[in-house]
Length: 281
Image (cartoon, rainbow, N blue to C red; front, side, top):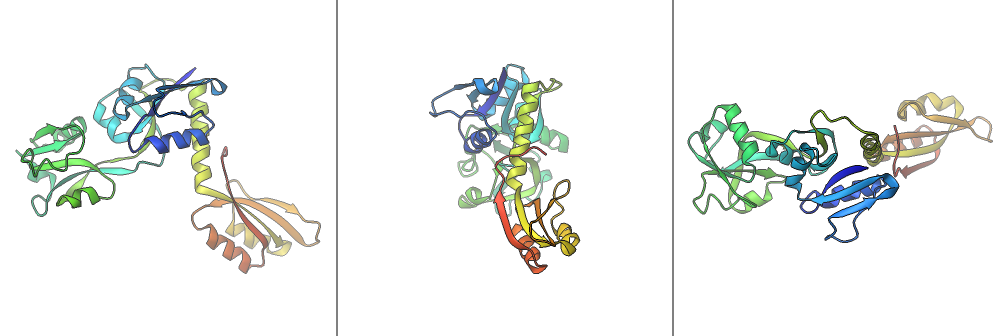
């Protein structure tokens, strides 16, 4: 039975449960549930603190898990990314009072507050900068104002929270992060893991594509196919109306309205765009 770790709270929780539900796995009915058994998919879902997931997976206690790459890197656990999941996108950045610092080299001998001591410590060592890392749990935005640190290193999505307390980011990003499916380093991918990967990939593709259906005169089919080449090529079927064919193809969701306009301009009729719930490609 596949043992899967899922974030039980935090920014990744809702999106992680949504993608698993779309992939056909059971979801918990109550936020207090810590374990959900899914016999239809031979799977057990364990709802854990996002920061602990990499540790459990790295120790081999659980087969796979969903967590942020920032938390995976910070943990130092022997776990690795299988596939990115496209949500929870953020960067790990330095921040300080406006104009205080301009690069990581300026932090030599300074105090830096963070909730990601492992990730920050490794980055500073790689950059050859000696600084004191102040480990804090939770929000670090007030550390400078309270005199605990000279700068902070934190996960940044929009930067609004930092700006609200008078801080600005500086220097290059320390790391880029997003939610990912992870496994123990070197662990074999069982049938259950491979099935999970296929399903998640199917959901991600379905989110990025729509299905386009339209009718077009046979003599203009080459023009139409150039607009809608599809994944492996479109499906073309003859219509009862002589000289016309029906075409079906997957096209990127982004820009599909422009594609529909282009088809209309070359004489396509009955142009329809429909959402894809899941797929295998």
